[in-house]
Length: 533
Image (tube, rainbow, N blue to C red; front, side, top):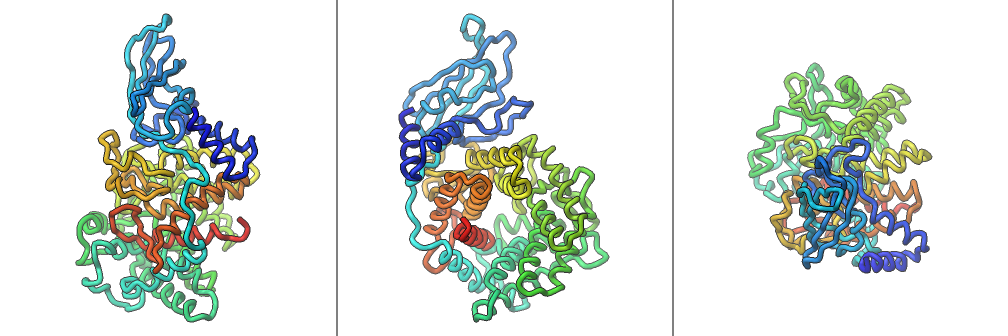
């Protein structure tokens, strides 16, 4: 408990916080995330390896058991135990007595009425994640505003970006490399990011604004060129994948396997980008293209309120049983409602939110849905992205509803518990106890945020998503810890950004550049330095 108290003292001193703030931090640290077995909650963490808050597990009840003993052994061999009534009790009674971080080996034993052991009913090994401690992280070397502009300019001036959007021709093979090929392979994702980012720079009459506008308009032309024409089942939707002879390795395989599909995550991103540029240019074609996409979504929306995750270009039919987690659709449909005044978009958003309430908000299956990862069965590839989008929607749509605020807070704690690394985990070593897809652990740079279980490594855009989520929570609740966490992650992005504006996507030895991720980080930094924060 001494280490926990030290963390609380450090946090309170750094924030000039009151005893109430420190006590709240203490209570929050000892509160489990989405307790398994409570109100029928299924075992969402069956694949989980990292925990920042005291976990619960889906151990089965033992016939004849009067109680259950939980014993955790830390890396030094020291054991902490407690007896509970349920095999799903959280580790809260001993969480503060354990080291702040390290590998923990847990066993759960069923006990009879006399306290004797009937049988061992379960065991888990996990890494206990270090909590957030304000003042423990290096300061940034420049401002968030300056860094955001550096990042946008760097992407804007990349030769492959210029060639893709301004030449009107296919990108020459010699310009495509293993480090930048994803920019070619996933045109909707990349094009939408570029249009949105350039729209932010395009206002005004400066040379840079004019160049940004030309690039944005070139990206729109590219997206229009890969949009399904009228008369096709998915008319108005731009394609998700694009083949190129220079693609190699994983992107080449992904595009080859999926080139006849559209993933319904991405037309919405393109429509939002069109609207971002429309706000600057007032070009009616941009608004019309966004409306076409929105209306096509409405046609495809299922009775359950969601959509297929992937659909075939040839007939518009669903590829697999997986349904879209429509968290990102909520903000888009609300934006369409605000833009047009047409209630059909609000109604569609409400149906999508009803799906989320019955789906991941109940089951806690926040499935990772990425264009380069195959759909998975429940709980096999959790991510925080759609979860965080849902939290932000909750606090914006229901700002005075304390039940909704509480739901958002639980989502944020889940995201931090499973995906935020305030310190480098696992001593920087590849450990066989970690069954998730991690690599190059010795080179991880933290604090950072991991992307998904199938890519459980630090990604800059994942830090950006948590920054935006913490800021949304801060605006809703005025909790200073939310702002402190957002600033710590913002400082990390700034430190990672080179003086020329290059921001690595992977905060580790891996070098594969995703421009959409860099631009998402720039947008998060802009939000971080807004005057009303």
